[in-house]
Image (cartoon, rainbow over the protein chains, first blue to last red):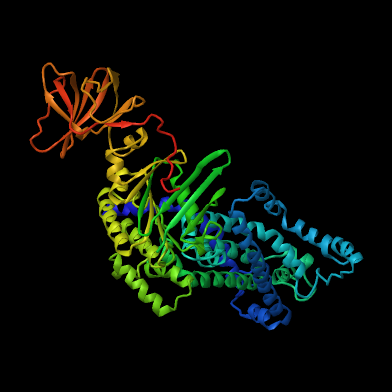
Length: 288
Length: 350
């Protein structure tokens, strides 16, 4: 009996460093933000349970549009980046001349900070930017790409950063596939395209997912890039959070916004895990 | 009818020559084994036939159909891998049905053929399992069903049994032979295991350093090898120096070699099981070691500066003491070996 108690005590002590760290620096702030959204333990305001902040969030058109826009900025650049990164990763997995050099070059954007990428896009694609000046003499008039309605500039800057990142992760997953499996598919009658969709993509799904989710969540909370390159209206929720925190001191509303952004990310994560469950059971070594 | 013609196929990887110009014709329904040590080019040759590796030159035909310029998916060649190479994200049935799906075979027809192929390898009840849940032997049988269900013109095996344990290997080897016979598929089998090669093949091609050095039916190749390399690679043998004296060719123990040997022949091959050994206090040999292997007893005998292996079988064999003097006699004619063992073999009909 005493042995069992001391054993569970020992287990508790062993878990404490990692578990305690998670609770203290991750769980607690998240809980405070969640409660803050309901007016509890709110910074710089009297506390008491209220749904007022959520009412404001969903009742104000600018915030509703901001929420949709944040989701748009998570989905669209991620999809665009994935569409570019997937074929690039496959191409890089094959042996070709100049492989080493190319493998190094495509990673360059990884070491450039996002804000710098945003300024690069601005100098390139803004009205009177480099691209416009080069293309104008040959009669090509670029549409508005910076601070435009569809946030094309944001998509370009985000993709510029995300494509190498996704390529790196997906490339790792593709590289881990036994080459015999690809050869087997070919001898059985699958062309390169069928092999890609039916074999490579499903088997690289863990990497594709990780890349997708990380980019998606980054887009959900993106602040600097949409603030620089995005349209004047709508503003993403991240910008509204900044304004409400530091210009209006409305921390309760900020907490509500943060909670909603997090919930959407978690929802996407759960939806994904549900959708790919069968596949992971089949070959991921996961128990049924 | 599917005859495979490989003519003058060569391949280098950078400076390393994997295949010198290799030619090989496989008859309809014939089971040919490429036998050789690792790095001899046998796998490269097979991958070239499958279309996974591109040859530098040479041509490959199946009957009148030139295939060396076709991508793998249009060659209609089945390939069974050492690593099984099953699709881990598909069930057994989906794995076997993959080739039919790619060929646009209607679902109902495909399902029936998949079921028939799985019955052929006794895996019908496991159709809905994933490869992960199967043993190595079962996985390889799935791979076999997957390769034959598309009714390939030629079936290729790349050391398919090497990852299995010994007992399972023998079992699957026999199954595979029966299946190939029943289906009458033209087959090439790559292996470094001489026992496997002899058990399976109608014809063995011995490869070394990117060349086919010798070919023949298993019995011929084992009993009358032409090259020292083939003699030593197929089973165990004693390669013994012979002496020419007064127009006679003599064994190390001064017995005359019965088979006709040219003056150029300096060595003969004599299998351990073809040597009779009798205790004799005045004999030329001395027992150096004795190994009891159950079915046989293997002795190493020192004779005039060389050592040879003698294998005796039967329950009446007496294990000799080390140091016992023995007399030796060849029970079969020692087989002369040509000295230029590396010279490439010309095809009879090429």
